[in-house]
Amino acid sequence: MKKYVLFVLVGIGFLTSCKTPRDITYLQDALENVPIQTQTDGNIRFLPGDKLSIFVHSRDPQLMQLFNISRSGASSTTTGNAYFTVDPKGEIDFPVLGTIKVQGFTRDQVAQNIKAELLKQNLVKDPVVNVEFYNMNFYVLGESGAGARPIIKDKITLIEAISLSGDLNINGLRKNVMVLRQEGDQQVPYRVDLTSANSVFNSPVYYIRQNDVVYVEPNNMAKRNSTVMGSAAYTPSFWLGMFSAAVSTYLLVDNLVK
Image 1 (cartoon, rainbow, N blue to C red):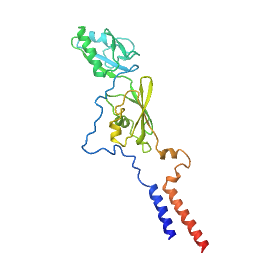
Image 2: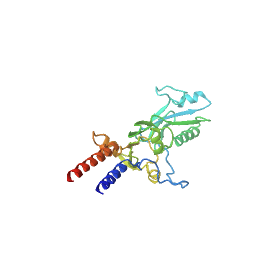
Image 3: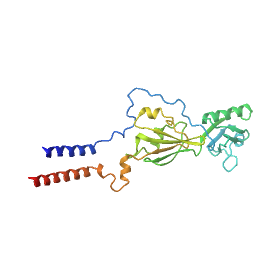
Image 4: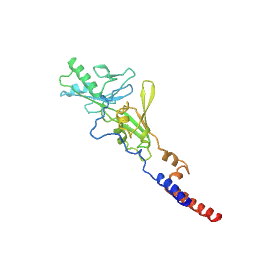
């Protein structure tokens, strides 16, 4: 009887060690056809230190040269050559128009403001203004495709940011992803459980901003694997060895007491 009990206990331990983890699948609590409310405005808005490219189109090439200044300081009619850095006051110094406030505005809003000012001052009759992000990034660290990722559109969700980095690897801890965000003179950490739809969609960091840092912590298996013997007790071979040793010990003791 004792022999059978021993077999059962060791077998349970072996099966438990091989069970499939439940913390791998994303958005596990999302219900089919049940909408989840998200933030209404996730657009990237310019901050001091950001760079933006501005190009003014006109049918008059001479007017275009007045407003489109290349990085070397010369006039340019090539799209994307002119870029500006937002100063600590949240402003840029734009040709002819002078100081323009851009902090807190989206790309479209900046373009519309410049267009309106050109028309107001009767400088260009047919202006088309393009504003693009220039050298603005978010960052990913840890158990994912680590590195700087460019801001490529007005809205980027946390899920998109992770997918742009090549997804989390199998050792990434999905239940406790940290997003570091600069807010004023403070770095504020936010925690998101990627296995929970409510945690993701209701998070203040559902939409990524420029300079956000997404850190994917390694799970317990990866942490144990960082040591020589750390993960041995969680491998099938370990439990097979334990099972064999237990059986051998039991049989030896059983023979001695007979």
